Length: 108
View (cartoon, rainbow, N blue to C red):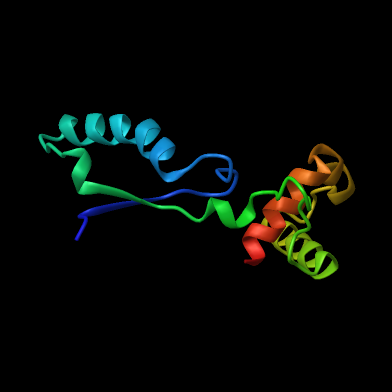
């Protein structure tokens, strides 16, 4: 069993598990070494699920989510954090495709 499993977040669908491990492992090894812990690459794995959100070049990408329900949920959460947030302005700042993909990943 692998002692350490790295789990990526949203926006890593164009990478793969090997690419993520190659980018993250040095930082992990350096951070642990700072505390006197040595780790080998074989002791680390990446739980990769980004391919589930990757666009099909022939079919495109359609988020598998009820967009209206997801937006309502996000609006409710944002209002709980800060009731003075201008949601229209916040929405304008987010690129539509990026927002849709994040909603789809969160819903999944």
